Length: 123
Ligand code: FES
Image 1 (tube, helix red, strand yellow):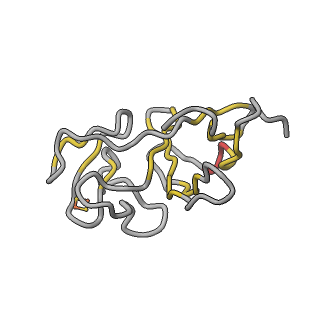
Image 2 (cartoon, rainbow, N blue to C red; image 1 turned 30 degrees about the vertical axis):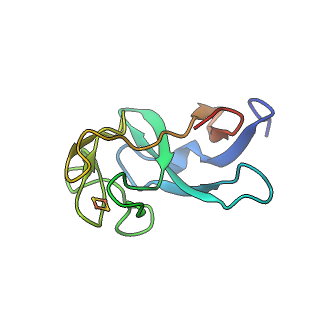
């Protein structure tokens, strides 16, 4: 498996992310001694997007069950704690207590059927 660049960290295979389906949770470790940050990737409108798994209302993880980020209509990413809804493509909160704020995006690319976190790019 060829890394797309030196900072790339493997997340998952492309076929693990179905359109508006179950997401893949992963951890960001910015140095060997740093506390890992929870993150997740989902596929929306054909594109893979990834964010820190941290609601902008209270620093809680969003998924109501591991990997379940989409609401029932599979239109928005939903925080399980107080129901904030985020646009999957932009991470913008469009409903709920943190309306107008955005999830923190994690730079990822999809290449040769694999998803990679680009750890050398800033969050
Ligand atoms: S913790 Fe996410 S909406 Fe309150």
